[in-house]
Length: 153
Image (cartoon, rainbow, N blue to C red; front, side, top):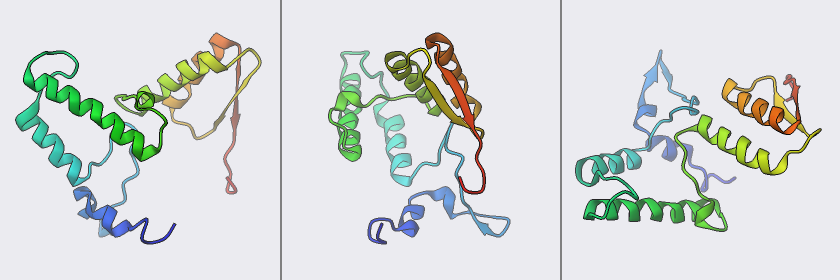
């Protein structure tokens, strides 16, 4: 990837938290599973929503609810284009990684796994990426294989 496509300094500048130094070192933050740092653009947009637009999406016929619903649904199209999905209805929103993994394991697993199939996990998985697979494996008669990670991957 060329420097024009990935300008790390420019990307870091969008995240106010990354401006900090911790113990004399530039902050690097990779703990993004349950929560994540927000770029200034997101902080500004969320602030505007809470200040001027708070409403219930898909739950009202008043102006704010209608506008919120339109913005919510338009975001699916924006995301669809960004990730090159075929249809905006392929875009679903979850509250975080744990819920997303549960959705994938239960929906994809239920539709695709059969007795005797193997689900491969590494020995470094977070608990939230183990339990959903254990549940679907038990339901479908699949088995889980745990592979070790070493210095070569």
